[in-house]
Image 1 (cartoon, rainbow, N blue to C red):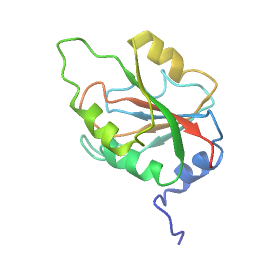
Image 2: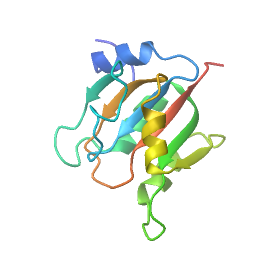
Image 3: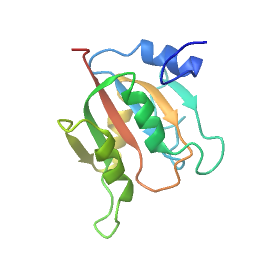
Image 4: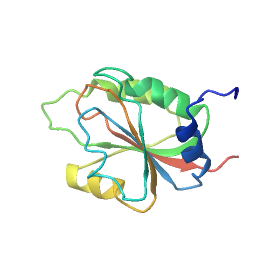
Length: 138
């Protein structure tokens, strides 16, 4: 048995292929992982049921395995309070910038060739999709 923060074999295999500037998406339960991701991206389904597995624990485990250079969220409407962003910011390194992109720009960023891994979570909160850019190991 491997001794690491993540033991899911397909997830570990996909992370092993990531290098500097590679992108990893933690998708919420509403995200269309098949139609809004690159055709060659590995999709790992961790969405057993609504709310299981939520996005923050996935981020926490990923951060034990990879360094993150930046993070991108889909911009939400002005009248929407995005509660998950504060949780993400608590988990992300203090130096990690968090950018917000309009919906179509976010989809385009995810669909780029740099996105190698899409993780389907059971996160039920809206606008919880988090696109991570992998940093080098220093």
